[in-house]
Each structure stands twice: as C-alpha cells, then as structure tokens.
Image 1 (spheres, rainbow, N blue to C red):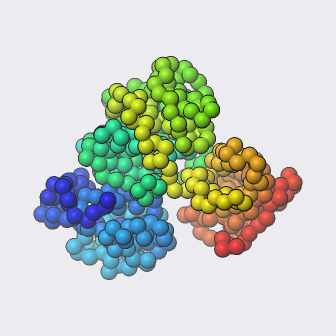
Image 2 (tube, helix red, strand yellow):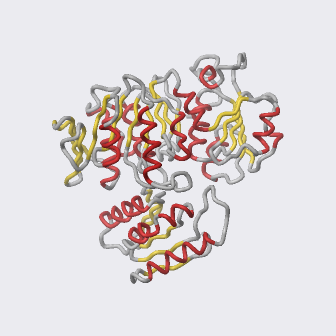
Image 3 (cartoon, rainbow, N blue to C red):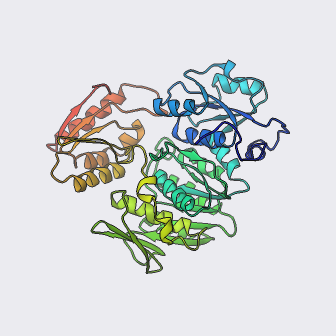
Amino acid sequence: MISTSTGNLSLVPRLTTQLLPEKNTTNQNPRAHMIGATGAGMKAFAEVLLDDGWILTGSDSNSDPDSLSLLEKHGMVISRKHEPELVSKFVDLVIYSAAIPETNIERHRAKKLAILQLSYVDAIARLMQGQRGIAVAGTHGKSSTTALIASLLEDSGAGPTFLCGAQRLQDDRNGKLGSGEVTIAEACEYRSHFLSLRPEIICLLGIEADHFDCFPDLNSAIAVYRQFVSNLPDGGRLVYNLDCEISSELAHYSNVQTVSFSVNSDNADWFSSSKSGETTVFHQGVPQQTFDFGLPGKHNLLNLTAAFATAEQFLPDASNPDLIQGLDVSCQLKRRFEIIEASETRIIIDDYAHHPTEISATILVARQRFPESRLVCCFQPHQLSRTQNLRHEFIEALSLADRVYLLPVFGAREQSSDEFCAESQRLVELLQSRDVSATFVPALDR
C-alpha cells in the first residue's frame, strides 16, 4: 500500500540522493510537484515517490479520472488546472511530462525560483543511477512485458522497482518502489527520449514504423534505436526479438552480449509454444516449465518469452516453478484486452490498441476467444500523422471486424483541425468500399 510516510525505509527517503544530488537538503520528506501528473508514466513515478515518503503535489488540465482518484486517495494533492501558485519555494523538484512545454506557467515559476526541473524520462534516468537498469523498448508490448518482468522478479524476492505505462489490475499500480537493486522501466522512442537512459539491459521487442511526428520514415527510427543499443555499457546485454528482422540486425552488429527470444523459431535462446491451453517455455532447446498462461494471443506469448529471457539475466533459476505463481493474475493490465462487461448477450472488451498491428492482434484474439460472436469494433484513431501514414494498414486491420464505428482522430500533441473528422470519415468510406459495415460517430458520448 502506498504511504506518504517513510515507514520502514531510511529516515531520509533513499531516492533523495539520486534525484536531488545537487541539493544538500535535511528535509526528511522532500517535496516534488508533478506537471501532467495523471498520465500513465507520471502516475508510475508518483507511486514510486510516494512509496519513498515524498510529499507530492501535481496538476493536470486533462486529467485521467481513475488515476486522479487513485493518487488523491493516497495523499497527493492535484489541481485540475495549471497555476503558478502551485509551485512554492518549498518544492525541491518539479517533474513534467513530455506534453508540458517550457512555456508552461508552472515551469516558468519553477525557473524563477531556481527549482530543479526534470522531464519524466530524465527523472527515470536519475532513478536508474546506481541501480541495475532494465529498459523495455520497441513498438508494441512495452507495458505488458515490463509488468511480466516485474512479476517474475517480485515473485523471486528480488524486490524490483518498476515503472509501467499501464495499470496493474491486481493493485491498481503503474509503479512501485522495490527494496532491491533492479529498476525496470519502459523506454519510449518518442522524440528519442530513451537515449537519456543508461540501462544495463535492453529488452528489444520489435520495431515498426510509428511516431511519424518524430520519424518521417522507418529508417530514421531505426537509426535512433541503433544509437540506443550502442549506448549499452561494457558488460551490458541486449535481449532481442529474433522474430523481428530489424531487432535481429541491430543485435547482429551489437558489441555486447545478446540473448534472443522467439515464438516462431526454436533456435532462439528462449522459445515458447502454447498448445491446448498450456504454455511451455524452453531455454536453449530444453523445456523449463509448462503452465497455464492467462494472457491471450501470440503477442502476449512473445511478451512472456521476452520477460523470461530478461529476468534470467538476474536470476539463473528464472525457470523455477515458484516464479510462475501469480503470473495469470498479477500481469493483467488495465485496457489490455480487459473484459469490462460479460453477460449472456454481450461481452465488452477495452483495449489500448492504437497501431494497426495491435488492432489486428486484438481482433484476432477476440475471434479466437469468442468464435460464435458478432464482433463490433469502436475505434478512436490516435494521432492524425499515424492515421494518415498507415491508412492502408488501418483499413486492413479494421476490416477484420463485422461492424466498425469510427470516432474523430484523437490529436495527441497535434493542433486541432477539421482533418480530425475528415480522416476518420475517409476511413469509413474506404471500409464501406470493401463492404465492411462502417459508421462515423462524431462524439465519444454517442
């Protein structure tokens, strides 16, 4: 349970020296203000700081209601709007999300008061200092794999600190401060943010074209991933997806030890297969364990294999049966094939899939799980640039549903325009030309 007191931790929260090395403070409970506080990553960091005994305030003009409620429940004071008065002279540190510009009035106030400001990714980088860092990177599956690695290491008694981009259903957490020396965090390629991190291990899940507002083509993204991998230290390791041609090529030219994982090739160091509801994990061709794995789909099987391959770098007995316990429940994440209603007449599934590859995977899993059901897909495209650049791929993915309802594009980090509606209407017309039953819905409350 999150606590704003230090509990059994040291009198001065131990993260003080990592996050505030320049500040000679005797404050037993340092104070941080978080701008954009309810985003998934920021919530994770807030939970880690609360575990460490920090006093937190925050602001978010576009707050997530669930995250807001959970953080407030555990003592964090959060404003629904940005105000300079929220940053007082007693604040030791300001942490801001990637969506918060330098012109933000609270950041301007912090600068005037000479308060240290860290972006979310820079705060993670400091958190990893002095720790054995694991960075989970790739286009798909970062949150699920991060949660799986954390679960394996928690069950082993390693006491990891983790920061996940999705909320665990078992405890409503995105992040947690551990007692051990391992820190696990998602490493996002957006704006090359992950280049700030210096992990000991990179778990590379796979690379596809995405974030077109940063990378105009796939090659520009690959170049940044290559730089990220090249930053691994001597003695570092790259755990990579053998099923991804790009990841395999980066591993081939890497100067560090590499470990491969796969669900298609048993030549990989770690390989998993699933038959008749039972999953078997192999290491170097030798079966390690067979068990029931509750997360559906081949993509989740790949994430599981990646988690074992990564956890094994810290735990020689990663195949220990005791580590399997709890995986079926503890790795269920909010909005990752989350069944939020089930009755005799309908089943409603919430999923964060926003890339065509992810949409296809989600729909195919739904088909497999509920083969007799009519499948209706309600989708809100995320980012205009992604939707336009992958228009053909979106049509292919959405065509797998029996009926499609499309909302206007959610313009994350993009200035609102008429194209948000026009692009979704264009998708509807293209789906209809394929005889897919598709309807444009102008507002979310419909």
